Length: 249
Image 1 (spheres, rainbow, N blue to C red):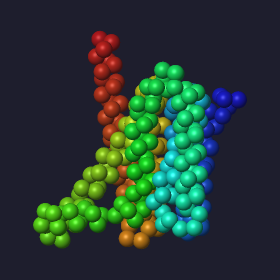
Image 2 (cartoon, helix red, strand yellow):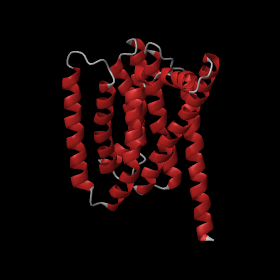
Image 3 (cartoon, rainbow, N blue to C red):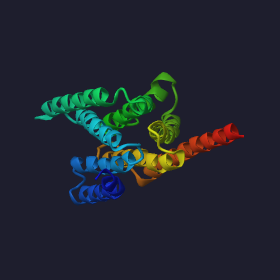
Image 4 (spheres, rainbow, N blue to C red):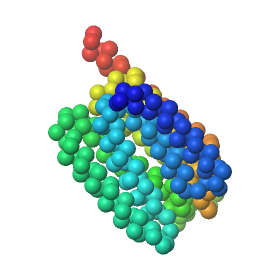
């Protein structure tokens, strides 16, 4: 049963990702479908972890955590606080269960060294992909703190933000690939699956920005995010394989 599920996992993830994109467009990008896009990518990415228990644990812990921080970034109206509390409780319970069940597994402990910062960076996407992550703070810093002109501040803000995008999503890919390697997945197999993590987060980020006032999400930014992930994951793969060759020699 596990083998059959593992073989179909990538196709299920692709289907959920495409379905989320379609429903987001057909329903004026209702926020729930942004999460569907993310989940589809995570489903693909989780295939790169060694062992079905670790794959399922990653999904069960990460998705509620991400959803919590995403909901927390929304206007606090109606039942939002209750939903936040529910997600916090669910995420805490699942994280505790994962530690109890798999904490003694050496592969789990090694993977956790990379999963913890990977999850933390993901929470930044959930929190700042909306109105809170606009360029206003950068422009204000350059104009008020450094005394630059508005034109210079806007140019510097553009360069800094694009550079951060490249490095941030590249770091997501590297951490995901390292976590997979720590779980026992071969380097060559881990890297392609690891790319699904930053790409799905980038798609969520840009789609949410596109439908957020005063933000501007574009396919070009998603392409930049993907390029950062490919370059940094490719660089770590090249370094790892070169070290392995030198070690065998």
